Amino acid sequence: MVDNNRFLFYISHAFVGIFLGRRTKRNVYRLRSTYMKGRKSTWITCEDPAFVGHEITDADVLMFADQFEALLVFPVNEPKTPFLLCTVGLVGSGKTTIMSALKEHLPGVYLRTDDMRRFLADQGYQTARTSEIAEVIIERLVKKGHSVLVDADCAADYWREPAEALAQYGVGIFWVHVVTSEAVILDRLRDDNPDREYKGEAARENYENRKVLHEHLSHPFYFTFHGDEPLEPQITAFLKQWPTLLSSAQTSALTN
Picture 1 (tube, helix red, strand yellow):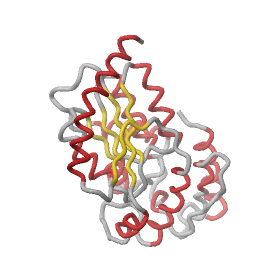
Picture 2 (cartoon, one colour; picture 1 turned 90 degrees about the vertical axis):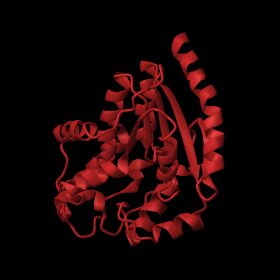
Picture 3 (cartoon, one colour; picture 1 turned 180 degrees about the horizontal axis):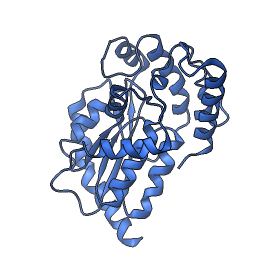
C-alpha cells in the first residue's frame, strides 16, 4: 500500500540516484517534502544512513517481513479483541522507554522499528523501506488475532492510514502521544547512542525535518506521555484507564 507521498519519495530517490550515483557521499536527494503534503520542502544535506547499502525490492520487503516476524515474541494470554497501540513522538522523545514499560503490562507483540532498521543494516541493506516492512508484519499479526505495540513515530500518513484500515478486522486502534521539550530532545541527540540510526549532524537534521510532521497532528490521542517527566506515575495513570479503553474497543467490535 503506497500513498502518493511515498511514490514521490521514491521517484526523487531514483532521479538523484541516476545523476549523482546511488552511493553518493552526501545524499541530498532525500527531499522531505515527499513526506509532507504541500509543506515547505527541506533537504537532508549530510549522509543519510537510510540509503546506505543494498536497495530493498518489493520482493525483499516480503522476505524481510518473514524474517523479522520469526524473531518476534508472542505473549501467552492476549485479549479477546486485539488492539493496536501506536506511538507518535519525535526522535529522542522517549517512545522506547515508555513502550518498554507498557509491554510489561499489556499482552501484545512488541514491534520496534529501530530493531528492524538495525536488522536490515546488519545485513547490508538500506532502511528506507522499514515502515513498509512493518506495515506488512502488523497487518499479518492483526489478521491472526494478535495485539501489537508499535514502537515508532507514527505521525505520517503512511503510518496512520494503513493502521486505521485495520479496523475492519475488529482491532481496537489506540494512538499515544509522546511529548518532550526540545531542549531535552536535543540533549539526548548529542549522546552517541549505538541504537540510534542518525548520529551527529544527521541526527539534528533528521529531528528538524520530522518536526514538520508534528505541527498539525489530528490523531485521536487516548493518552499523552511527557518524556521529560517522571515515568512511573504516568504509566500508572495509563494502566488505570486501559481497561476502560479496551472495553470500549471490544464493544465497538461487537456492534460492527
